[in-house]
Length: 145
Image (cartoon, rainbow, N blue to C red):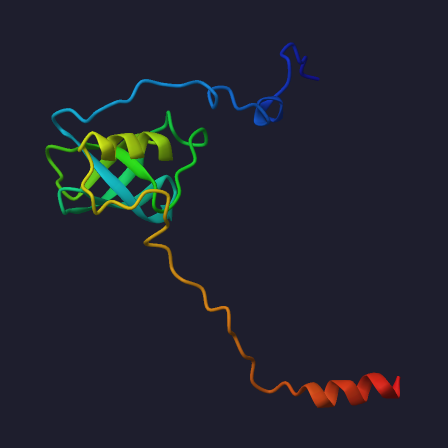
């Protein structure tokens, strides 16, 4: 039988948002980095992002961010570009909506950047009709019972 000497497993840490209320310093891009907006989540720690230099890149979420920082479609992120692969990049940082607005105000992001909007998400069809079902037949069966 293993002896549990710790204070619990991952479920103990699950409910804590440790640095949500903490303000962090705004980080600007350096050489070899680029701002981007997430277009599509691909799974397995990967995503597709449209960089603000006009290139669409396949990005890998680094281990420090995985399962700690949740990235969704439409988020503004900072990418580390690869010298040997121009179509691939690594996600370094996810900006909050407030930080992204500040970047836009400082002129780091173009005016065309949409913050806090899932511009690339697939729109769902809310008016779905099913063939082969008649409401009148169902009412007759209920009355007979």
